[in-house]
Length: 238
Image (cartoon, rainbow, N blue to C red; front, side, top):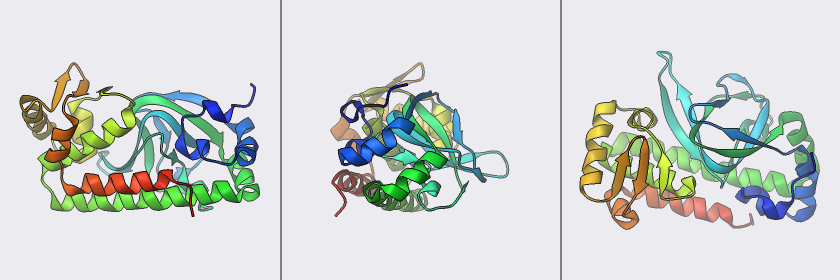
């Protein structure tokens, strides 16, 4: 399969690389589709590959002993799943699974390690992203502890909207409840209130954002904080 051309890449990390550094990685990049609930990385298992998201959303999940999973962070085309490889650790503490179906560029762990040794620019970009993702996870943890469900649901919908690639995206109340760590009935009630307010439309497993500004007003300040950090990582690392 011919190597990808950088101009055709939608992932922000790869698109921002110097062309010579991208050329080192391009032969190892393999386009793959992922579905909702599809597990890409297993918790407490060796990371076999990294995934640079092109479209859709990957969710990082903490899997509990009872089998339940709680979302700790989301990844769209701004980032990648597989950060343990950047830190030189073979085991992922979290599970990575498809949240909104999409496509990613997969690179096997050995190939990524080799390129990281030869490309300081790629290493710097991924460390820069890791810092921003760590901030997202930390802020989201504080949000779960301090803010009520209506604000958290609005914040989560905004983050999904940012990464979905359009105003309409597939998601169920069951998935939203799992991501927020609450009962499905609570999400159903709050989503209904957002729909009655004209902020979203929900039908047959599809959410449509109708009033973006109104949804931002309904969210807590955590969304704006996370958004500022995400926008900052789009700039080349200093």
